Image (cartoon, rainbow, N blue to C red; front, side, top):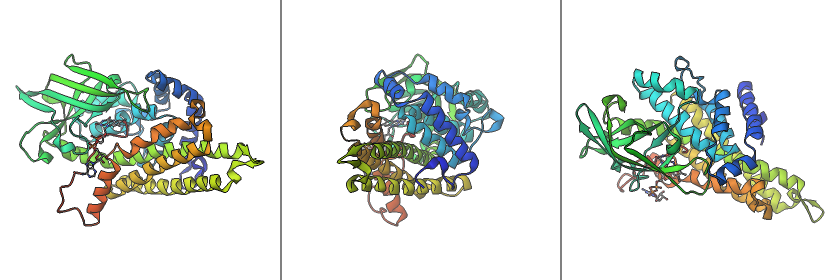
Length: 402
Ligand SMILES: Cc1cc2nc3c(=O)[nH]c(=O)nc-3n(C[C@H](O)[C@H](O)[C@H](O)COP(=O)(O)OP(=O)(O)OC[C@H]3O[C@@H](n4cnc5c(N)ncnc54)[C@H](O)[C@@H]3O)c2cc1C
């Protein structure tokens, strides 16, 4: 118990993957390197390229397109280890390697798959997912970016916000309104927009954590697209996003486990070494109990995340389970980071100790991937309530990172 590196409920292959990743990130992405990249807002290209050599970019891509597909449990291990090393890495990785790769792999045309998936699997192509807008986050179905019919294609006009990795992306997978006036569930479409189109402008935002991978505003000023840019059917975007967001929430839960586990590991090691009043501080009950509470919450959140991942792998409905896992894991991450700050005392504020980074990185996991309030609304509906009140759809943008 308490050490995922030797967890008997993982297969030997999964344990091997975790151990390989842990060693890779401890070597290539130590606390000081991630701190420098975040402080200077330098895109972590070298580390991301190293991840390509490990074959990590193809875990959601089939072998025919150059990928090495992994089941959802294994994907969660990969995501957890990446996030544990630094949110900036997960922000660059998850939208591209999971959300966008799955969107194209499951819903894209043969041409789109041939054009994008091999390059994604090799780690050569970066993508971003643009769902959120300034006036619509949780209420995603109300988005305003328009695709206006133009000949056999469209002109895209509008603005997105919080698009993580947009400035480093080659292609932005964007949700737009195709049919104004139609029911929201039959009015939205996914399109692939080249980021370097002269009519696309990207503006990075200043943010609290994971700064090495920018989160951006994106402006579309009459971007002309042909019909080949459409992913799936016209007006099928809402169904696609609902489908992908269940898995996305499981991935956000995995990110949260990475934060929680990282904070727990640092706090435990510190409490075993730091001595006050003649003993290691873990022996002071107030400190020991915080560590025990962190371990209990982590084990619970990990079990719920595995449960949801197993349902994804079995092709079973996962709407409630993904919400439960995401809420439990993200709140565990916040709690572990807070306890970790307390256990490290004044040193928790010092960048070289790494705990302040987990503290800054934790909170957003309660916000993106559908805020935890919106996901509790999902659970209320599962419990039979919420039918007569105005309900937000169970959307809420953002892959985990991003
Ligand atoms: C670092 C970061 C990275 C991100 N990356 C991406 C990305 O790559 N792509 C992307 O598309 N988006 C991204 N997002 C956006 C993210 O998905 C949204 O912030 C999230 O969906 C919430 O939307 P909002 O911020 O507009 O909040 P709002 O929807 O305005 O909500 C504000 C508050 O009101 C609450 N609330 C709203 N409606 C209800 C309701 N019906 N019941 C109860 N409470 C409610 C919310 O829970 C929240 O507490 C990112 C955000 C951040 C911070």
